[in-house]
Amino acid sequence: MKTLSLSSSNLSAFKQRAYLKSTYNILDLKFSIHADHEGILKLFEQAYERFKASYDNADYHFYVITQNSPFGQPFVIMNDEIRLLYGNELFYYNHAYMMIFNELKDLFKDFFLIHAGVVSKDGKGIVIVGPSSFGKTTLTMELVRRGFKFLSDEFCPIDRRTMHIHSFPRSLGVWEDSLNIIRGILPSKDPATDEKMVKRKKQWMDIDDWKEGIVGAWTVGKYLFFLRGKRSSAFEEGERLIDLLLIQENQELILELLKLPDTRLVSHSETEFYVAYRFGFKQGKGLTRKFLEVCERYPQDIFFYEVVLKEEPYFDREPFVEELPKSKAAFELMKNLINRSQHACALKEFKGTSQLLLSLGGIVKQMKCYNLFAGRLDQMTKLITKIVEV
Image (cartoon, rainbow, N blue to C red; front, top):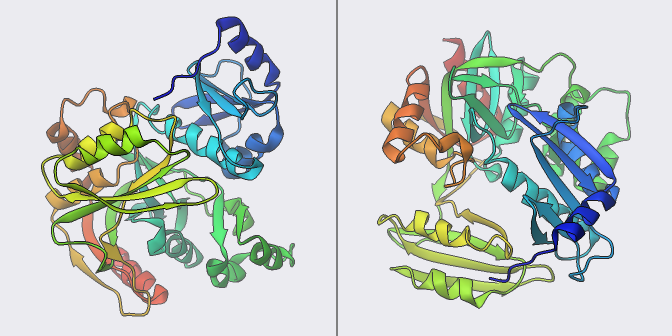
């Protein structure tokens, strides 16, 4: 892996060139983003406008340099390390956004971050865990439309000390297929909003632009739903798939991954901005962990990776729920833990998976846990409402 570096004087000079600055205070983390162009700052401000703050003593600093780079392309300075950005202007701003967020998620000390939407009703917290493709945001917002309080549509922060769920009112990224919900609760002050959203496909919106007074501060988790679907036909029996996107070809990384036992290359394709690989390997034997450990040694070359879901959502059927044992719920919660890498500050006190599961078990102990098999939106919201109001 190629190592990039600058002398301390050049590093300091580039930091000074990043004269634009935004500062944020998210949960227990204070950080600032510095740049020589407003593009990356706009991306963060769109998503985290509610978390902007004004202070001089940030815990972490990130510098995005887009002009006159000695490497021939833009780069980010994180912990005095150089990370290159690729693609055209739109792509490398998004690349910088993801790079910085991937660093930030492991810096939270007192919070577990779960990939989930959160609402509350009469002081009872409802956590909806699931990938974006399962309509988590749409379901969350439909519950809000029906009178639930909003806490988050994407990240569920759970305080490890109190087990309280904190509000995370990041701006909403709304896609065209959610317009049927938006039309029902958008204020009439901007009649052109629908037209702009259809044209741009996705629009960042502050939650108060949907409906004022619906954001809750914190809650105690009482209900936990895991969104489920039908098994995908892309898998061989007993196999797990991982998609890996590289910002540049790296055969050293690929060969190292293929040396892992029972691992195969499923597909390989290239686009203008990245190289996509899909790997398959047998479940068990800790292969997922070993795969991700290899990937973490090549942060300069990797744009994104994720475990491929074994299930696909079907929204044209009648949904149903089944109760889930708390031991399995704790395990599923761990699988959806965003800050669970070996570098995550929140996990440093845990000496193994068993200790982490024990801690997560303390969270689900106070909750009723279910698998929610996705189906028609109105019926899913009725199911959740009926369970919560019993």
